[in-house]
Image 1 (spheres, rainbow over the protein chains, first blue to last red):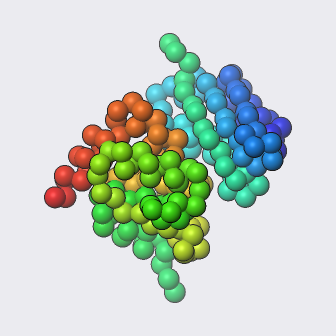
Image 2 (image 1 turned 90 degrees about the vertical axis):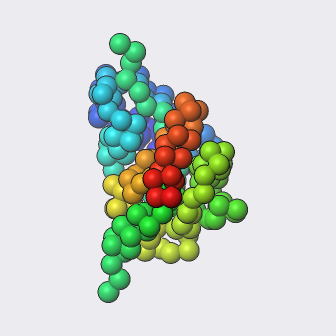
Length: 75
Length: 108
């Protein structure tokens, strides 16, 4: 599942700095940090929606918990 | 036939601050819900907590209503602010309390 998340997010945010941590080692709780120019000018809620859209319907089913930290790189 | 979307629309506008969560404010059933309750309580404003575990239709319905796939979901003034990470980030930046207080006083 970690590989799926990394692939999906690399595809959606090709120029991002990405860190995915499996917080429990169980393959269903993750902490994700993404720094991407795609987020410039977006509110936090829209930044998180972009991530959720990229992960699709895995979220809430195979992925039980996802902590998110998103931002655009400092200008 | 139950119109869950209409029920949710009614819920989020009936009170200035509404939190859809797993469990209750006094007994949260998920760490993310617990942390969100904590930061809202720290702001010292009353809020309405809706336990989605008590109602599977609402639990699924809020995901569609908010275009947001997870619970908790915090609504302020009828609008989705975000989940646990956003509520916590706003709190840490000192932005959550003014937002909640303004919403609470708007209806008082």
